[in-house]
Image: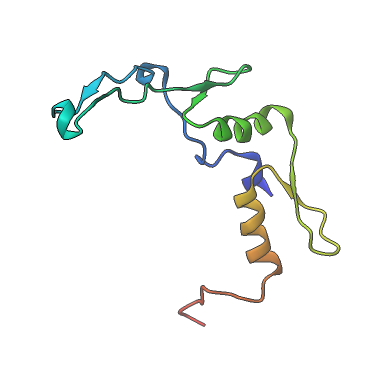
Length: 110
């Protein structure tokens, strides 16, 4: 299917301009009342070693890497079906539409 070849906007792309660290944030209170200072998590980005895309989550980078390698790690397990997908969500959609008898969307004209 042509849908598997495209990213379909499912990756979390973060433009380089947004790769700023968050400033430290304090919680008010004294030590005896249990108040303490904490630093906000600094933004960590995972950049693709092949292109310029970067991602907030390492798992999104792993998913993105299939666009460069062509690997389709999610094969359909239905007997006789030889389709495979780059993303789990695409496989799930395929199974629901091609192999499920459950048709949740009925045509209002039929």
